[in-house]
Image (tube, rainbow, N blue to C red; front, side, top):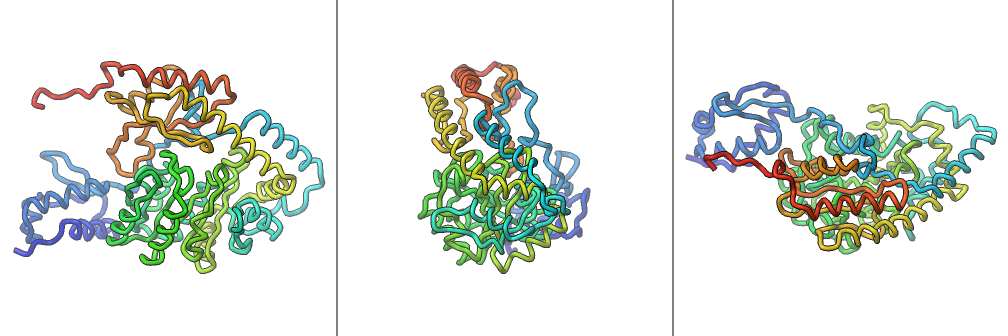
Length: 451
């Protein structure tokens, strides 16, 4: 009997599912029969089926069989809409009173002027050179300045990510991501029919060896947040960025670098280390406010047209008014001043949280606007989130960020989104107090007598 590697067999079945040769609802043969048909051991057949379940390609029940399921069904909305709780520490939204007034004053001046015809034009992905030049300056770091000719615009950062995914992978393709990642990236991949491959991370983000191993099984790209990664608040060192860039060259891969938090902790982008192999995405939402959104895509010359085509196919072009406002805010210095205000606020809120969470497994950084709280033994993230909600405080459970279904990390993300410092201090002390208490009896898993 010739024994085939179970992953190779699972990959073959995954391709048949992606192509439609094994449509939704198809019943796979029992494992013993499958083993005979494939000429493999029953134990290997079992591993094949478990691998397909792990990827979300099949589901099975004892006595009913194993069926192809819809892996590409969109996730339930999570960490996307403002919470109904009184204090929302779930959505990443930081805008203090001083920043609000700076934006409001500048916006009043914008509308008091005679608006150019460009502000009334249909949505576009390019606009005039002055808009792109201003946005290129905004995203410059140190000696790095992107070429305005390679800058494309989308309606928001989410659309920029979806367009980059679509440009790199077709339905059934594979893109690697951090094992805990941005929930919309997970949802976008599902809607596009792309399989996300989770990568192990350490204190600096993605482990290079994990990327190598994943690429050995075939990848169309990799999506990364090198700076203040959400939810784990990890930042790659220059050495790690350089190593990842080397791997992109060696493995012939393209990375999508999400720079949405880069303004909080300016660092040389990954794109500087591998200019021809990195698509950068960014947005105005975190820098300023989500009420006026604009997505930025900086694509290498060879990838600019495929990305532009993806933006157009999705109807994700940027509103002209948003582009005109962005240029005005940049030229007036509002963007730079609000960014600085947010960095100051982040440092103050970090100090308050660090004191409140003393003795707990709490991860953040003075520049970050979010934190990761690893929960004490006994707490489950869902139970902790529910207990916080009872206090009128919304936090995000770890499973919202998990690429692999069924994985429930024992932690929660806390966004620095309270409207003011007194509210933040109260909320964070309440969350810390709760974490230091034993969970209610109902939050413990119930074991069956047989176990």
